[in-house]
Amino acid sequence: MTEAEYDPTSTAGVPEHGRERLARMREQPRFFTSDLTVNEFLLIQEVGFEPLGLVVGSSIYHIGLQTRGWKQNQELDVLTQAMYHARELAMTRMEEEADQLGADGVVGVRLEIGRYEWGADLAEFLAIGTAVRHSEGRLHRAPNGRPFTSDLSGQDFWTLMTAGYRPVGLVMGNCVYHVAHQGLGGWMKQIGRNCEMPNFTQALYDARELAMERMQSEAETLEAEGIVAVQLHERSHGWGSHVIEFFAIGTAILPVSDDHTIPQPSLVMTLNDPPATVR
Amino acid sequence: MSSFTSTLPVASFLALRHSGLDPIRQVMGSCVYHVGWQNTDYPAFMQQQGWQYEGGWTELATPAAAWNEARALALERLRDEARAAGALAVVDVAYRRLDYDWAVGGIEIVATGTAVGSRKFALDETEEIPLTNLSGEDVWKLLESGWWPLGIVAGSTVLYVVSSYRTASAGRLLTGTASQNQELVDYTNGLYEARDIVLRRVRGDARDVGATGVIGLNLEHRYREHEVERNGKFVDLIITMHALGTGLVAVDHGGPPQIYYALETD
Image (cartoon, rainbow over all chains, first blue to last red; front, side, top):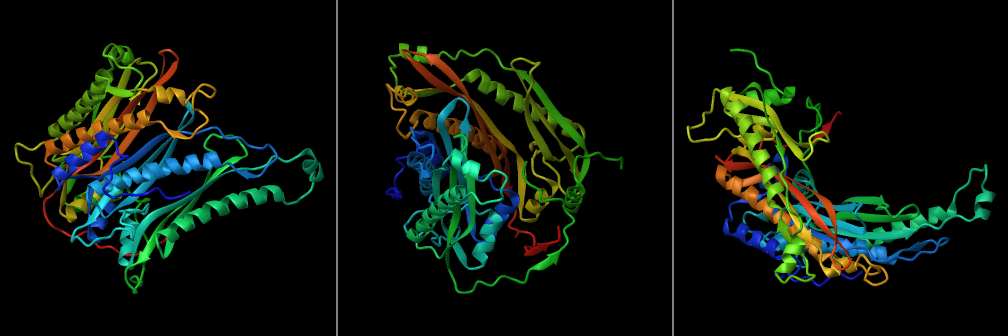
């Protein structure tokens, strides 16, 4: 699972029409599009950044043939690689779009996967976020020269920045795992008894560890101090029972100062319904 | 002053009042539109032009125009109702796209919102009544921070994506490349093209109302497969994509409202 070579000036993965749109967006530098909510929009400006535009990367991907053993706990490497590679394609294209706009990074990144009835072996990968730039030109890119990416909301971004940290990149790891079917013998032994199913425990444990380990090694490559807001997703993506993808994703962060204190939180009793959102 | 009706929750209502906007009444605009016949036999057409088995795409003009027209009509009616009510703006606009089983080939766009008037602001004669899907609280925050919502900006497209020989081959296990992981480049390109078209329309709308930015942009798309026989099975795609957001302009340099860390009690 090597990281693809990244050239910040490349637009190789961005189709022609994506490039045209970006060129137009550069011509009118004051104009931006974004999917930010009002709160996010105001907070991002408050912390010194300006939104530059909605950036998107996508890839529609055909997943190859995977063999598996009925009674084997094993990683399904074709599936693991397909799911990782397609996400990487989508993310890299999004970063390239951000690069074209001269962004420092991308906030509020969402990574979505669509599966459709009409394409059983096919999945749609989509990375979407808002490119931002520091309004006083202080560079906030990741140490490797890429724009930073982060799935933190505008609110979390504000909080993180004011607490003396900055995001350096979204890091992810995945593992598609086949959980062995239980034999008849194993089933007979546990009829009517409380007992652990060590086979299953082991399989799920393993798969999770692999996904998290891969995510951590990405963060180490980025020279990050840590990862916040990690989410661990478990999904079957229509592969049927016994095949599960474990997917770990989080935002790697670096300190920008030694002072990480936040103002005293206040206890509030809000009169609002759950926060208003853009509909 | 006569009584008012509104869809606004209590906090929204008070936030608007606080920023000098008073609800007048609920307004609605809707349009049921029949989508005309569209030739989808593009591959045959393209083959006549010497096209072989490469992928490609083309916008399906009839359904694309139907979505854009229907939206424009519904929003214009919403604005008409607001104008009749003597409104300055329409806030909290809920925008919905519907289709019905009983209306074959028909789509409906419904937009409902609250028309607001003002003791504090006025539109000059050339200005259109701004519509926004933002809530009362959000409008208040924007006004406090020196931004004015200028209107709903949107775009729709329906795109026909012709699949290439390579994509068809990825669907065949024995004679093709189905066993390998691979990107379906023509589908990806089609998706990019659809996004480019709708975002271009959003920018056009934004320019028309004089906005310098768009927030809350919502992109939606769906696929319909279209199986065709051209010396073997090819699966073409029809992508329907919609984008909708609110255009903004900076009128003043305010700061955002007070920010604090909250330990909420609910």
